[in-house]
Image (cartoon, rainbow, N blue to C red; front, top):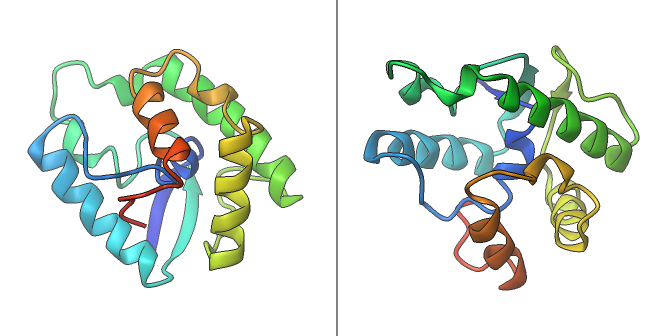
Length: 138
């Protein structure tokens, strides 16, 4: 199977420690992290993805806002530069241990954090990165 992710979730999954918007959201995210831990491929999509799914029933899901699309644009640029390949809808990404380590190193160094500006989770993600990614689910 394949996990469908929007570009900025390539950054979010680096620091995911089981916290999120709701119990349904974190239960879903835990399943996705488990799948990615089993080396399932990632298909980059435009707009809401497998992580967003539990939020789509809300009256005004934030995943449909322009701010989420801008995060996707910035993350796609930065991750694409890091991996030396385009990150765009339809691209496939595999998170082998080497790529995951490189992404975490770049995240910790701030090279791929522009998409995180203004995000309500940025403080938590910074703390997780500063801890050496202790407690992450992936």
